[in-house]
Length: 190
Image (cartoon, one colour):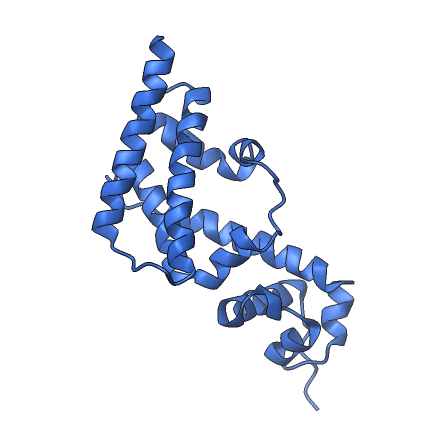
């Protein structure tokens, strides 16, 4: 008889993410995860004492994947445009993960200010600041404007209410970015 495969925490989180991708975060439960892993529910509940703990671990992994996706910008492309388009494209390609990240209530920060100041967003903020030439504080203001704009597009697309037209969206994103930078510069000069 071959030895049993050890079901690790990482395997369980990966299985939970696949369940989210296939049928949404509401479908994460011990039975579905154990079926995906072809094991009993015991290893799932051993690694995660509650399903909420498993969902939080899956959320953190999804957030990490999302951040990596955002920062995968082709060489020579404007980082702000690239990040905005990637944010929206993620909603197109991974609508269930997008909903899990932004519409499930599992986000740890409860305000835009907490989000802007988070460690996870530091690379994004640095790229934006470098691309705009603005101060850190003004870059945060611009980020909030552009993030709300991109999030609106992404949410509508993720919920199947709008087709993804990259050229049109990129044009709108550019207008939002340009307007937010101009407003920040004018405030700085006033």
